[in-house]
Length: 216
Image 1 (cartoon, rainbow, N blue to C red):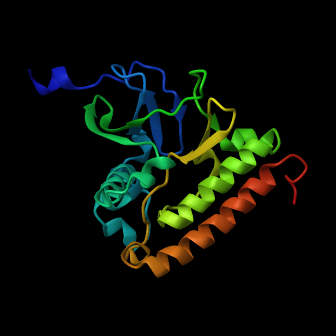
Image 2 (tube, rainbow, N blue to C red; image 1 turned 90 degrees about the horizontal axis):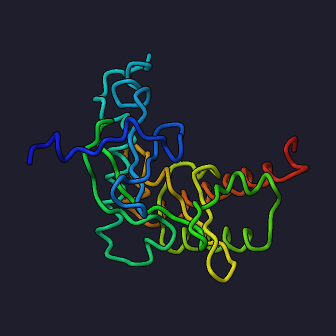
C-alpha cells in the first residue's frame, strides 16, 4: 500500500475547531481522536516570511508550532509518569494528511458524548462551583508536575463534564517551552517560577472574562 493510500484526507471535512495556528479535525477512522494540522498561513515558512528582524535568518522549523508541540509531547512521554496525562489529552502519534503532518491526540468529550466545553466560553457565562473546582485542580496539577507551557490562554483550555457532574479541565494547545535556552525545562526551580508567572496571567485572563469584569 503506497503513502498516498495511507494519507488521511481532511481537506474536504469540516474542522471541529479553528484555532489561531491550527485546524482540528475528528479523526476519520477514530471518533475518540482529534487530528491537529497547521493552517496554511501559520506554517513555519509562512511565519518566517513575516519576520523583519534577525529572526528571518532562522530555519523555518524555529517558527513551526507543530514541531514544537511534537517535541513537548515527546519530552512528557519520557517522564513515564501517568499523572502527566491527567490534564493533557493523550498522544496517539503522528499521521500524514493531505493538509500536512497531523498530531493525533485524545478527543475529550462530556459524559453525554458531546464535545468538551471551551473554558473561555464557559467563563463568559459566569463562574460555576464546578468550573472553579476544575480550574483549581488543573492549576494544582500544573504546579505539582511542573508542566511547562507557553501562555495559558482560556480558549486553549477545555472542561469535560464527568458522570458525577464535576468538570475536568485540560490544556489542549500551547504545551512546551518557547525559550531559546529552555532553562525552565532543564531546571525544575526555573520551571516552577515560570509556571507561577503563567498561572498569574491565566487567572487574570479568567477574571476579565467573567460577566461584569470585562472593563476592569
